[in-house]
Image 1 (cartoon, rainbow, N blue to C red):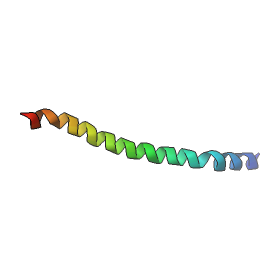
Image 2 (cartoon, helix red, strand yellow):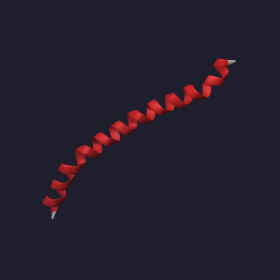
Image 3 (tube, helix red, strand yellow):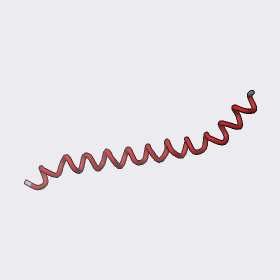
Image 4 (cartoon, rainbow, N blue to C red):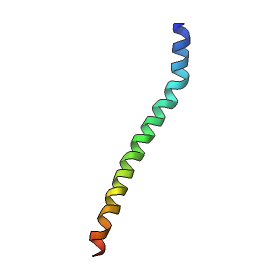
Length: 45
């Protein structure tokens, strides 16, 4: 039973870690994009 869990975590754990890392990077870039879009009306005036 433990061997099954360890095998599952080694097979699935790495893709999950990469996915969370990429989502974190995208989130930061989206926040920057949102701030830029919200400041556009002030810059246009």
